[in-house]
Image (cartoon, rainbow, N blue to C red):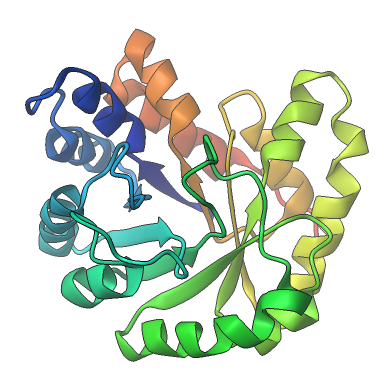
Length: 253
């Protein structure tokens, strides 16, 4: 069954817009886990635009106490700065079950592409090994159509398919234009011995069709749409609806 990890970045965005502690990221994470979510995802950025290092530490304690997965996303090449010790140092301190490496920068509003594995494989190899030494499973953000053999050669355990193009095609009424590349890439990854995660712009509307088509997706991390939907229906109800979608998806491989 596909596991659901809830990304709580948007809770931090709302909190940071006003200052103080409300809404409480830890309380929101606990509500998601109470509803049955399998894990929590965060993507701390060096500019601390949403999740901060202290949030990561607090959420690491919550997920450890509940024995659920903690997934930290981030750019392993981004240097430390005030308030941000760097992705490797943060993972050394908090020991997440999974780290998802993402090639994003401060100028990006959100993650919008995967690694160029043929070009960046050699630079990724020692980083993947360093995260493995901390006991982390390593997933690499990947575009549909990515060079899977180069991704495998990095030593990573999984890829996470960047599903923004799928969501755009689905919203435009032409999902068939995007789906074949995702299906092919997922199959290639599994054939290479890599697990397959997926994330970005997934929603209640488009998730079921993607899971049914791809088959064998290990995990989806969902934040923006889920938190937005929860404004109307509440976190508990919304998380349970996503879990119903993952449980109902009938993979065809």
